[in-house]
Length: 431
Ligand code: DOR
Image 1: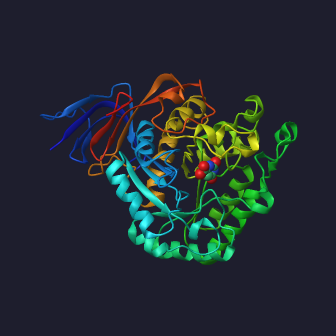
Image 2: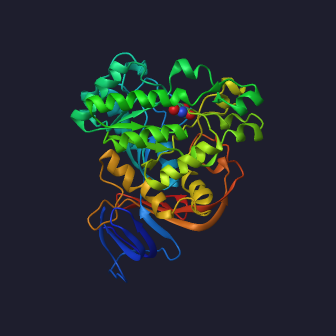
Image 3: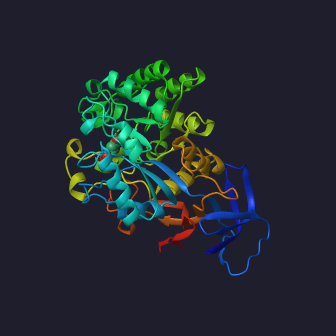
């Protein structure tokens, strides 16, 4: 049996309240032991002195673009990007071409992931047929085929009635409905946050109410019918207040925040001189919003970090600002960005960040991941928190080079990754 002994690392395992130096023994695809000075015959030794050892990261929001949009990304490149970012389990969104809105689509993704992927892939099925927001998709059949989340991400579920029915299904199957909160009548053709920057730059703005009125609506629906409402990429201070209040009332609502909304603001649109890599949905907001998101993540009101990894081709982004596609790549910069910009300055403790990227999303999705307890699946990420590197999209495994972080110097590197007991990344290089 394959044996790997990870020696002398600082193990952070939020599932177990472990935070200290320990050795970790992997046998086959399971964690066999964790403790002091472990010795085992015939094990491959990974020297983790000076490194941080965590459960493999879990990302609830990734665009893999396959089928149909492989010029942006595919399952092979996207899962490699995930491994390079320390992610061992990812949920892929259904806004592909065709949309993943039936069991055939779910099976296709699972088959491709088994053939081409290097990390675990959990497909999200669409809530509505063709993501048109009108007619409920075959949630039951997709669940049976392996879908573990439902979402119309990229687009809102416009019909409140359909959303209500989706939440009823969510209750039946015990899977979250992840939402893209954007009222189209308020969002209009907004390309940046509505306010100072949209005015200064002469760009159409998207007001915060475009997000908050939909959150308020769905909280009301969830209060009524139950189910699990998961709010995707929360971006405003007011959104956080609404979610916090709903949770205090016992409504089953969870939420996620992206690395970019935690670290960048609308000011970057101006500073970058209309760089279309600052364009995403929801848009970058104000510094006050960003501070509120950080506090909410620290306090646990925001459950998880999710990247919304949204790879696009050069041509998709090389347009006038208002015509460029929305989104940025995120898998390969997520940990370093958050570690450098939030953990090192003391805004978020490292153990909370690790929890929000491992144990919390695994629990939310209800999958076996996010733990280094004895007997757990051996998905492991080893980090060098003192290692500095400069972001160069040319080095990305992702086909998407669309990041506003080009040239940024970040401290925190993903060194080694194990998926199912196999080393998929070693010394920062894919195996
Ligand atoms: O910026 C975004 N890009 N936000 C989304 O919700 C969708 C995503 C995409 O698919 O490119």
